[in-house]
Image (cartoon, rainbow, N blue to C red):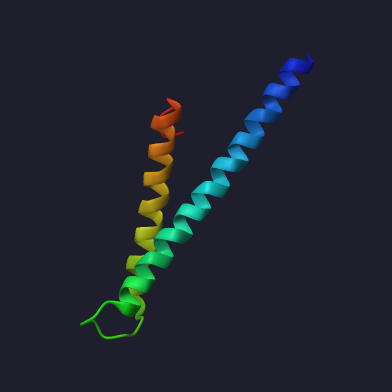
Length: 79
């Protein structure tokens, strides 16, 4: 009985860790993309609505890619 409770708690902590790491991956992708649009030479140095939308998309793709990579590494798939 205690073992089952420990397994549930470890599953919950694993889920929380995966959620946090997914959020970090999203914000890293978002920040890198915004930095690209802000500092890349030759582009107008403004962040417009299109850059924000692209940055959000890059953030979502970074999160998806991280979850896929992490799932393959643990042998569980995408989740």
